Length: 383
Image: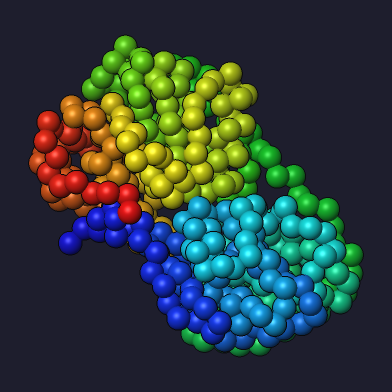
C-alpha cells in the first residue's frame, strides 16, 4: 500500500538514553549499517565534537551527554528529526564548520553524493579539528571507503581501521599536520533548454552536476508538447525536488510563477545562485517535500523528477510522497508531470491517486501525466 502524505511526515519517537530519538521516512541514518557500526564504535575524546553527516543523529548519539556535540546537516527531513530529538544541529554544509574548534569529528562518508562532495567533507573535517584531534570515519568498502580512508590519512596523518562488519568499516584517525585550504566549491556550466541559453551554478553534491540530466530534458519537451509555451505563462507551478533548477529556470522564463521545494540545502543554494545569474525569479524553499508550504497552498501545475535514493539505497518513500503531495496540492483541473526510469512503477500509484494517467513520452525515461478531477480520490493531509 502506498505511503500517505501524513505517514511520510510523521516523526516516530524511539527510546534512547536520556530521551527520545525521532526518525521518519526520507531521513537517512537509521537502520543503516554504516551508522549502526559508527554507533557501536565512537567514544568520547576531549570536550567538543562535530558530526558532519549526522542524518537523524544515530552515529554520534553515544557522545551525547559526554561531550558537547554539534551537527551540520543539509537535509531538511533529517534536520526535522534532529530538532525534534533535542540534538544540537545547524542547517549547513560540512565546509561551513568552524576551523580548529573540535577535539573529535564523526563522519559517515557521504559516498552517494559524489567524489567532489566527499573530498570537500574530508578537508572540512581536517580543518575543523585542533592539532591532535581525532576523526571517526565510516563507510562501505564497495563505495570507495579504502580510497577515501587513504585520502583522509594523507590529510591528517595516522589512521587505522577499528571495526569491520561485512563491507562496512570504521576507522580512527588523528590530526598530525596542518590541513590544506578548502578546494574550489562553486562550479558552473551552460545549457540550452527549450531554445534558450542558461548559466547554471552548483556546489558539490548536487544531482546531475555539470550538465542537465536527460530525464529533465524529456519532461520539458513533454510539457511543451502538452501545453505549449503560452499554456505555462501565468500559471502557479510547483517544482517538487527542484535540485539546482533544471526545471525551475526554464519554467520561470516561460512566465510561470514557480515555487521550488528542495530537501537538500546545497541544492537550494545552487538554485538561488542560478536564478540570480539568469535574472529570473522564483520562490525557493528548503522543504521536506511540501512541509514548508502553507496548508492552503494549491497549484495549477506540478512537475517533478523525483529522487529514488536515500543514503545510496533505492527507497521510494520520498518519490511516493511527491505523488501524494501532488494529489493534495493541485487545484481541480491541474496537471501533474512526472519523469522516471522505466523500471520504477508509478503508474499504479497515479491511477490510485488521480483515477487515470497518460504516458506523454518514452525515450530512455518516461513522462507520465495526471490531472486532478473536480473531486479528489483521497485527501492526504501534511501531518
